[in-house]
Structure formats: C-alpha cells, structure tokens
Image (cartoon, rainbow, N blue to C red):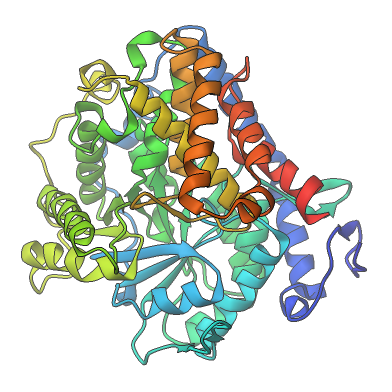
Length: 535
C-alpha cells in the first residue's frame, strides 16, 4: 500500500516512476471529491439499471418514455455548437493508451484519436496510470517511444489528430484506489485525472477536454455526467461548457432515449456514436431468456439487418435534428501487411461499411488501425467534399418505431456449430490477451475488444439457455479450439505459461455458462486479474 496525503484514501498498488506525476495530492483530492460528491447517485442509477433488467426478464419490453415526450416533441432546442477542432470528424481512430499506440494513432492522419481507458484497455494499474502519463506527454508534444527489439524510435508529427478520451463506464470500479473503505469508480478516476492535469493545458493549446461516454442506459445517467462536468469545471475555474462529450449509444435502453440524452448534455455540445458491437451485446443481454430475440452467428449480424438499421437511422436523424454530429461505428477489419489478398478483402469490406455510413448521413466514423484511415477518409470525402460535416442533412424521411428497434426476429442467418466454435475461440483468446494486459487483440483479421468478446460469450449463454447447445457442447468446443490455438501458436511453453489457457477458459465458461447471466465479463475478469496476476 502506497502512502497518500488525502484523508480516507488508500492506494493499494505501488506508485513508481512517473506515476507520481499523475497521483499528486492535489489530483487525488480532486478525484476523491468527485467520488464523494457523486457516487451515491451513481449507485442509485446502477440500481435502476438492475430494476429495469429484472422487468425485462419478467417479460417486459422497452419503449420511448411518456414522461419525456415534451423533450422529444420540442423542435426549439439544439446542442451547443462544436469547437473548431471538432467540426470535422470524418474519421477517428481508437485504441488503448499505451505509449507507442498513442503516437501511431495521433500520427495516423485521422481527424481524431479516442484514447481508450475502457473496452480496448486491460485495467492493470500500470496501464491505467501510465496511460495518463502518456496523454500528458502527447498533449505537451514530448511523447517518444523506442522499440526494444530493433531500436526504432517513434515521435509525433507536426500535425496530429484531435485527442478525445473514453473513461470507464459507470459500472466499473478502480480497486487500487480505496476511499472511505470503498473502491473509487473507474469513471471518476479516468475523467478526473485527465481533466485535472490537462484541461488548462488543452485550452492553452487551442483545444479542450473532449470525452467519449460509454455504456449509458438512460438520460439520468447523462444528467449525472453533465453535473460531474459542471462540478469539475467550477472546481478548477474552467468555464462551463468547455468540456465536450460524445455519447456512445451502445445499449438498447439508450436507443429509446437519444433525444433526452442529448438534451441533458446540450450545454456540453454532445454528439452520439453508434457503438455497434456493444449494442448487439446489449440486445442479447436485455432479452437473453426469450427465444424470439436469439441472434444467429455473430458474423452474420451485419449493420444492414433490420434492428441495426433502425438504430443507426434513428441516431442520424436525432443528431441532425439537434445540431449534433452523428458518428459511425467501428470497422473491426484489420489490414494485413504480409498477405496482400487478405488485405484487399479487409479494405474492400471497410470501404463498403464506410460508404454506407457516409451515404446514410453520418458525419464521421471509427477505424481501429492506421492503415484503414486513408480508405475510410476517401469514402467520407466522396460524400462531404469540402464540407466539414453533413449535420444540415435532416433525414426527415426516417420514421423509426419501438417495434423497429426491437425487430430481432427479422435478422437472417443461422445458429451453427461453426458459430459456436468461433464464439468460444474468440472469447477465450480475448480473455487471454486481456489477462496479459492487452485489451485490443487482433484475432483472425478482426480487432476484438471487450465489446466483441461480450457478444461471443453472451451468444453462447443465450444459445445454451434456449436449448440450441448444451454445456457439454461448449466444453467440447473449448477443448477443440484450445488445441487449434495451441497449434497455431506453435510454442507449447509460451502457450501454457503466457497464454494462460486454463484461466482463460475458466473465465469464459464462468460468464458463458453461469446459471445467472453475469452483467459484464470484465467484472469477474478484473477480480481475477487483481487477485492472481497483479498480486
């Protein structure tokens, strides 16, 4: 346990090297103040989530809220105008906060870089705190990295992407920081340290503190973030409205409250993003016991199936009606630098995806790899031309109902043995990567993160619950896929020691075969990480 000067706060981890630059007494006091001020509301909102989930499991459904119809029907309100460096967001790249990745992402040619403390980041103590060191250096322009194996050096170009940061969702704790006997919320840590150290730095450089907000399920959760922003700005004497936020619409409940979420965050210039992979996971999670909501093999659930199409069409219409940017989803295809045929196929799929988004009215999109930036940009250039965005395209012809948003039964495709094996393989491989400290894993040409791993394990849970497969089928698939992975790696010693096959399989089966559906795989995985790997 490291010593600390903040009353009631304990650091259950070593503070070494440049971590001290992040964990200053003043910064820790600021984060502790956020937690003490707002954690009771966070806990209440998590309880509301649980209550609504119980209602759905009891046969309930989702619909647009009667209590907020006045907000949806009022055409007079819009969100605050975007600052100059967020006017053109046609391609943004995302990834974890590791030093080399930060440099490559900022140099990628993308308009923005979302530095991720959430789904593509394994929450080791070192990853989370050194991630803040890396972002401070990036903002200062001093960040450098030397690769051990070949001595190659990485530095920032003169022109770099605009920086945005994704803190953890409301549900995730930071168990290395204990305040008054309880873990501080990960969201308060990630937002708080970044804002404390960098808000004024960014303003001095002509930018500002910009955030992506994940996993929200209601406008009340957006209201909490808005209050956190105002509190933080007041504490540091930063003008209100300086923070700018983009909300990931990646849960089905949030899709029914898009207007209301924008309204709550309107003074902080909110935009919305189509968080497609988590959205698929949320659909399974919300209706997991009901056969009519069973999805086919995950690779056949494209963005053009009816329920996904309805969600993205409504998102664009809602954003543009309110003067907000509509950001498209992640293209998970990874270009290959060694297999030209595979590279051409990946880039063709990426171009098709981005052409559809730009044509639908999205103002920008996400990619996971620097080599995807050029082709994604070309598809948006073809639609936007010299315009920074297409917010003026209102999409008045779109009319999406609650039934459209929930129309899972119209999804084409089959539930197959191959699909089961793919889910088991990807789930186990991702957990293995996550336990090794890497939250963004390239697996069979796709960039997998916690969201895609959630789809894999929740599909297996749903299929078993609804009688498509048995736990024994899952066990056999795990046996076969682990042997396949072992053969592909070709190094038995590394596979057993570094790959952690037994632990990865154990955690996958824990979240895929439990009697009661585990809310997030990252919660038990985080406990295991702390108890068996970091300590």
